Amino acid sequence: MHPSDSDLAASSAPPAPATHYDTSRHDEWAGAVEGVVRAAVSQLNLGSDECPAVELIDAAVLDAQIASLKAAFPDNWLHAYAIKANPLKGVLARVRAAGLGAECASREELLHARRCGFPARALVKFGEALEPARIDDLVGLYRRHAWLTCVHCHVGSQGCSTAMLVTGVRAAVDFARRVNAAVARRQVVVIDIGGGLCTNYRSNEPAMAGMSFADYAASLRATVPELFTGEFEVITEFGRSIVAKAGVTLSCVAGLKSCGGVPTAVLHTGANQFVRQAYRPAEWFQRLSVFGRDGAVRRCIAARPMVPHNVAGPLCFSGDLLARALPLPQVAAGDIICIHDTGAYCTSMYSMYNSRTPLPVYLVARSAPPQPGARSDYCFTPIKVQSTAQTLAFWE
Ligand SMILES: Cc1ncc(COP(=O)(O)O)c(C=O)c1O
Image (cartoon, rainbow, N blue to C red):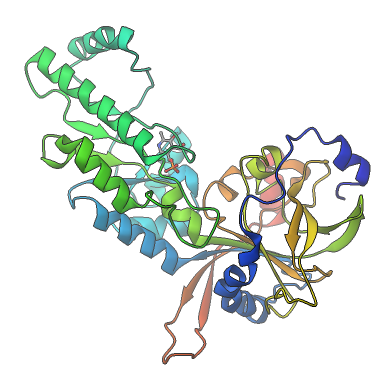
């Protein structure tokens, strides 16, 4: 079941631009994942009834993001990965093995992190606005409660410039110093600067200009030098910037229909996994690329130019769309569509509507090609395969 013409016309979702990104780079982006798409076809039988769609986490990309995070900041900072971004056990195992901590937003996340082997350290957070008119009250709160030893800020997630994040951290440090001056001792000893660094959803590069971990660290050094002197213990809580680029989701095209003359490719995943993209398409989007059923890129050639397509998911509601009139190489039933950059806030926001079982997830390890030009070998390790019984247990 998928949107009809009238559903599309009646959809109450805000209008989305057809393209958030430069679709003329399709072949370049598709080429970068062609090896793993072909390997998924041959090794996982992607495209068969048993395996119509999968989600993949590229271990090398995850490791590289963690390495660049650690390289950008001093060794003694604690990087507590925001597990809400992607709490899959297989992801957490890798994050923990790399020496990161876990930032938990609920009792359940805390339990999950403990079960995944993260050491216990309770930092209880509660939110108060640091408005100028309230600062004296808040300082009084710290004065009355000596156990308040941390100041935490999280400015926002995606959509915040590096300068905006730095301004928030500066305000948090100013407040901490004000508390310590008021109580005439070092009561606040921990600054938690939150996460929020933007991911680049518009191309393959991990970060947008000026928004890499190294850029953020340089801005913090310039504007909040106290973080780097040992005056405070510093904690970070990055989520998206660690894991988003490691994920791709591959679905074969279940069928094609025409909606108002626009070819509409129907996938085995959609609004369940991509909640924000379906409900807020003007702001949230994923890059898409197209492959034949053998995993070969459907390249754009003069004889076969790009054509505007809708890309729909399988749910019974009119807004289950991943793209509207997006230029793509001509899609055929049975083709494979790659949804890029799906490692963060996609499966973790999974919706149970229509009781669909989430896609199986595999961690992909690549062997380095032995010599230039040789093909990599891919090793797929399942890190989540949910049974129908597990899905239906949600409703019990
Ligand atoms: C308190 C807190 N810390 C960290 C994060 C992680 O943010 P991001 O994934 O953008 O790095 C969030 C996400 O909204 C958050 O609310």
